[in-house]
Length: 84
Image (cartoon, rainbow, N blue to C red):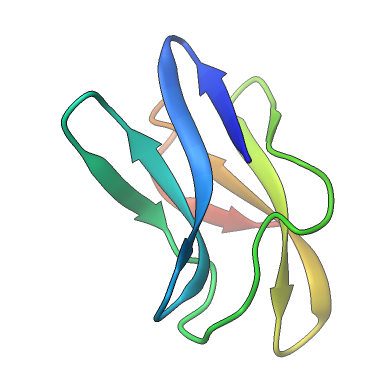
C-alpha cells in the first residue's frame, strides 16, 4: 500500500524483522520512517494510508489493544509519531 504526499512517495512495506513499517521512497533510497511496534506486528492490513492536514494515518495491530489508528507527522508539526 502506498500514497503520494506533496510529490513524495510513502508506503507500508513488510520488514522481515518488524512486520509492516512506514517507509519514504525516493529514486535512490527506501527509508524506514516509522515502525509502530518493536514486534513482528502487521500494519496497513485494514484500510489504506489516509492523508490529513498534518498527518498520515494508518491502522496497525498492537499487543496491548489489538487494532489501533496511528498518525505520523510528516514534518509540519514535529516529525514524530502520535498514537491517537
